Image (tube, rainbow, N blue to C red; front, side, top):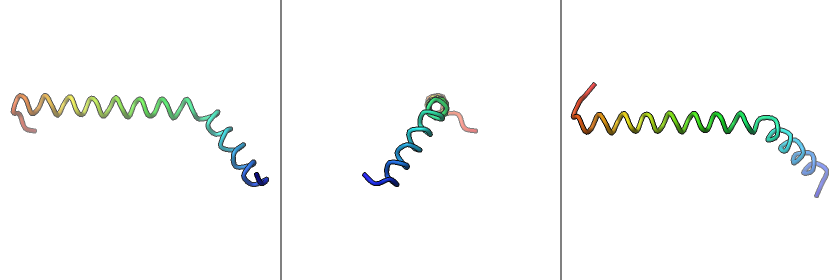
Length: 51
């Protein structure tokens, strides 16, 4: 392993350690928004409503 690879791995580990929880929160929010949009679309199709 070269010094450059070791340095890149150390920086990546630091970034994951620092921002890992924030990324998980953002992914959960994005998933929740997708679910809400899907439920809205399903309920719109069942009632036959349009915008």
